[in-house]
Length: 166
Image (cartoon, rainbow, N blue to C red; front, side):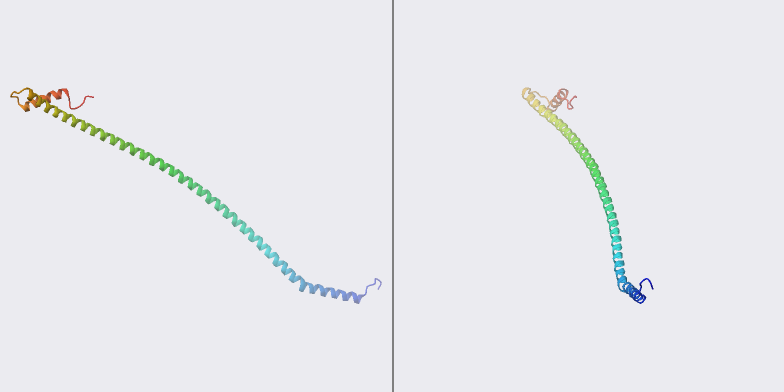
């Protein structure tokens, strides 16, 4: 032939090439392809796991922010309630203190008034007794002591009334 091709050598090389291709595809390409597919699968699984972890992290972050917000609201509510309670307790304590003070003042006034009345009555009796004694010492007449006492008490009643005029 004219192109300078040696057909038996060409066929031999073609057969050798085909055997090499078949051997490489069976012994070389399949294991390499399996390794590449396994590596690709691991990378894909790793990316998916990373995405799941990122989503979970975002969900946890959002929940934590919500819980923190709720805790702040609850703390604020508790502080407001405590302030209201404190104000109410202070007002109750002030009211009780005012009532106790009024009761003490009223009781003191009553005691003072009772004591004043008792003192005036005691002074009347003492003055009446002194007047009777003085009158007996000065006048040695047959006057009756009981009559004297009534006269003196009537005079004292006119001059020192039991109830003060206001």
